[in-house]
Image 1 (cartoon, helix red, strand yellow):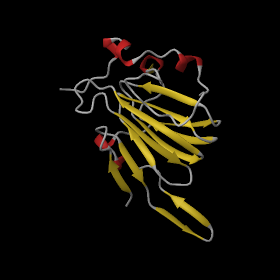
Image 2: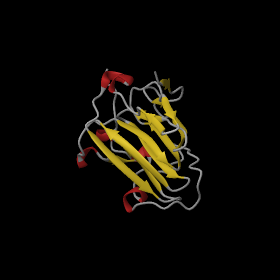
Image 3: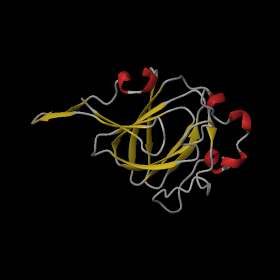
Image 4: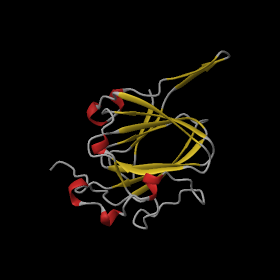
Length: 181
């Protein structure tokens, strides 16, 4: 049975340390199981992200999509920031280092902004519980002082999109994530 570690910083974030089985032939790891996560959200799409050292992705957030990230190779500093109005942990920031040599994954619920800095060349797989929907793709400035993240790199390589994300206080109210009452 994997070790499921609820975040002590942001509600509903879960760190997964799966069981690893190996012998002289190699290793086997079950990296994801729906029953491990809140509400048993069904992941419907798998994606691969390969970035060079120094790249920074994010911060991104969704109103209707959960993510599950798993590093296969390399090291990344993951930054999470709770944007959910009504959340006990609204405004909290958490840093988690993923390392392809250490089997672990991160479940990220809707409304939690997420991004990563490639501390080395990295290969990350991630599952999502909704098909790509451009209308549910939102951003938060990676360098917002309200987030206060130490990304672990200097002079990050950013996409044009991520260079123009708004600060937390400038996110329009209609796209601020909200927990159901």
